Every structure is written in C-alpha cells, then in structure tokens.
Image 1: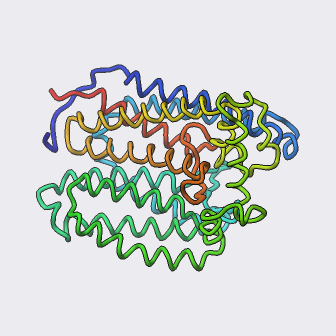
Image 2 (image 1 turned 90 degrees about the vertical axis):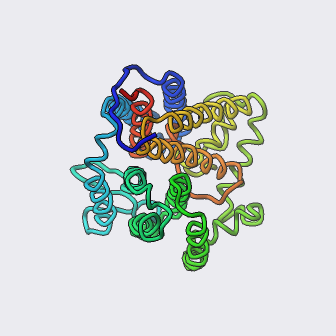
Length: 371
C-alpha cells in the first residue's frame, strides 16, 4: 500500500454499512419520540416537538451522507488545514459574547444565523482528517519524536484544552482515545504514547478534583446507590429502566423511567429507555447494528487503496465505535457519566450530521479501487 495511488469510484454503497446506519436512524426517530413525548408536552405544549426536529436532523444527515459518499476522500487532503483551522476557530468562538451559549452548565454550542451546532463534534472529525493526512506523509520518519509525535500532539493539546474549558470531559476523553489509537496504528513509538499517558493522567486528575460536577460523577460511579438522590440519580434510574425491561421489554411507549425520572431520556440516556421498552432483545439488536458498522469500518480500513484512506477509515471507525461503547457503558454503569450521545439514535443535530458524514466518507473509501 503506497501513499499516493490513482483510484476510481466503482459506484454503489456498502450495503452492510448502509443497512446498519439506516436501521439505527430509524430506531433513533422512534425512540426519540417515545422518550421525549411527555417531556415536550410539559415544556413545549406538543408531544412531537423533538420528534419533528429529529426527523429534520435525520433528513439532513442522510443528505450529508450521500454527499460525502460521492466526494473523493482524497479531496480532504487539499482542505486539511482549512478544516483544522475552522474547527479551532469554532472552539475559540464559543467564548465570544453573543456567539457561544451555555446549556446545562456547559458552554458547548454556537448559534450563527439562528442555527446552533456543537464545535467539538466537528473538531473530532477535523483531527481525524489531519492525523490521517499527516501520518501518511511522514511514514518514513514516523518513529522519530520531532516528526511522528510532536506535530500531532500540539494541535491535539490545543483542541483538548479548549474542550475541557467548556467543560466537556467526555468529549475530551473520547478524542484522546481516538488520537491514541490512530497514532498507535500509524506507527508512532509506543514509548512516546505511554509517556503521554503518564503526563496526561496527573493533569486529568488535577482538573477533575477542581471540577465539582465531574468529581461527583466519578464518586457516584463507584457507588451510585449511596448518592441516589444527588450525583448518582441518573445512574440509579438507568439501572431501574434496564431491570424493569426484562427480556422483551415493556413495549415502545410504555416505559416508566422516562416520565420525569430519568434525566435526558432522549439524549444521553436513550439507551436506558431502549433497555426498558425493547428489553434485552432490543438492546442486543442495537448492539449488533453497531458491530456491523464497526466490522465494516475495520474491513474498509484494511482494504483501503492508500495509507491516507486507511488511517482515515481507522479514525472514523474508532470515533463511531468508541462513542457507542461509552454511551452504552454509561447507561450500564460500566464507565462514569460523560454526556456523550448514542450515534444515530440520540436526539441532536450536530452529532447526527457528523456521524453521517463519517459513514459517507467510509463508503467513499470502500467504493474506490486502485487503477
């Protein structure tokens, strides 16, 4: 596999990847309506407020997926630095008066011309494209610190600092994992990667002990029942949702925990609602769909026509797979609460569109052959 090879688009879509994505989008629409209908009646006077918005988000996501499917992946090479620069400026703009705004105690959203979006989602994609491009160009010297590690650590550090300041510790941790995996696959010395972990660990500890909200979440993760009226409230009610769901679930729309007990049932904890209403069978089916996407992503990365495509597919697959694992892990009490959404299923426009773009790029890589 060389770095620069001529390729042609053989057309079509990766059927397994497309099927998994479309089914998840459909499940997302149904479950967002089920999880949010009572909530929106109280706050907006209509049970279909979030449902209608999710349908629009899904249509936009499908359009983006189709567009990215037919944009040659090599095109991103020519735009790698403008994409990275735009992502950085967007993160900085969060702190400009009248541009960035806060919700739920975190300043994570930009509002431009009446449209809101989350810059950290785009920043994740931008870093993946940059790392894929940079590592594919530097393979001959990827083992050296000054070429293989430092040029990738600097932009990563800048992005992470801006994201932690929001604060968004979940997204910061997710990006850190994606970058670590990409650098490892790219051939960066393991000693440098392990040294980075040694440096980051105490820094992360210092940040957490000074962030009361994050510290409470971490403590409640260890024993949620001891803090069930405070920091462990979300996790305890998530457990109750899964417990009452049983094998076959209570049925769509019949969940109890979403009725003002489980916070954020249509976003962060939609997996818990699925567990209660669709049961173990529904949860296993959902996990199987994510495994299909993960499997196809790995296959695409290993069969990619050049190094840039291979690294890009690796990063995109890691991003989708890790986010799904973390969200499910939070709902099941396997990892601390992060605030990350479930890809393609949770309510949210930015996450949905960016995830669809990732799948579209994977499909473009899958459909191209060396000539």
